[in-house]
Every structure is written in structure tokens, then in C-alpha cells.
Length: 233
Ligand code: CA
Image (tube, rainbow, N blue to C red):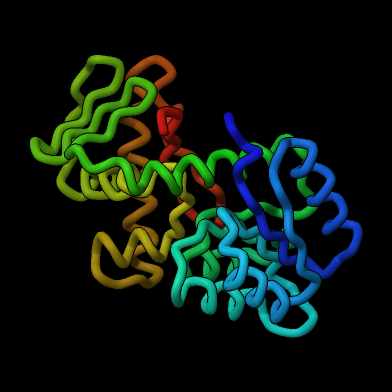
């Protein structure tokens, strides 16, 4: 991993966390820029075009979501939001505004570095992957034939189940919020569609579970959303 070529921007007002991010990421070979408030963060993002932004949502001057909106206006730069454990709704909003992932505070070094690596890989993979197939770690989804195979066994899914799987696969590596998935699948999001999503996911999981170690691809973050793992991008 040639991580030393990556330039990261951390927008975080708490000095201890900013110092921690700097220390951990520099030790891992990244270049790191820091901003202690949202306005400085927006400026540094625009002027330095970092490869990834770590964005605290609770900033002293402007709401972190405003910073995210400003970045998304003219950049597809990957953004990982940092948030306190109680901020589930805010995390979901951030994902819907285009954040690629989130990390709950307090976080460990291993988790931080894994999320950064994963997000950098995924951001590149999204641009590269377009051959009509998703293939990762034994799971093959053929978008033209609308078939799903796990470890060589074809699994039959309903139209809706397949559509959910294909959506997760097309955004693999990224955490998708319940509301994003519902909007994409049913065109709207409400309590009823979230319930439908949960029922469909339970059926999808049951079908994967029929294969030994078959549940390894999709993770569920309670109250937030689902993610399809992708080890091959
Ligand atoms: Ca803060």
C-alpha cells in the first residue's frame, strides 16, 4: 500500500483528537493537514484538494453537515465523518448528504486506519468498476443476468431482494443508510418502507446463511444502515 502519496485533511476542533489523528495517520505514512473549525476546513479542502477528509460533525463555527454540503458541491472527495456515539440521526443525514463512511468516537487506531484504507480503496474502485459484474470474496453478482452466486452456488432471490443486493454491491465498501436504500428501491422512505427493508434483509440473510460462512458480506449497523464488504477493490 503506497499510503504515503495520500494527503488527508482532518477537520476537528478538539485539540486532543486532532493531535491523535495527526499522530496515527502520519505514523501510517499519510500526509495530514488539520483545521480546527469548519470555515478553515472548507478553505483547506478547496485549496489543497486532499484525497480524503475526516470531518467532525460537531464544530464550533458551522455545522459539520454544512461543511459536507460545501465539499459535495464541487468535489467527490471521500469524506469520513467523526461523531459521538449518540448522534445516530446526524450520522444518517451525513451519509445521505454524501459522506462515504463514519467513525464513532471514541475510536481505536486500528479502526481508524482500516476505515481510511477502505474508503480510499472504495473511492478508486467506484471509478474503475463497470464491467457488469460484482465479484468479491466468493460472491458474484451478474448485473445483466440478474443472478447471484456465493461460493459457486447460485442463490435465488426475489426481484426486490435482488435489487437491494445489487444496490449494496454497486456501492460496496460504503455504508448506505436505511433511508437511502428505501428511496432507491421504493422511491420513498417512511416507517413502512424501513420495515419492508428489514423484512427483505432478513430473507436475504436467511438465504446466505444456508451456505457455510455465507453471512460474511453484508454488515448491519443498527440504527444506521447496511454495507456490502468489498475485499477486492
Ligand atoms: Ca467537536
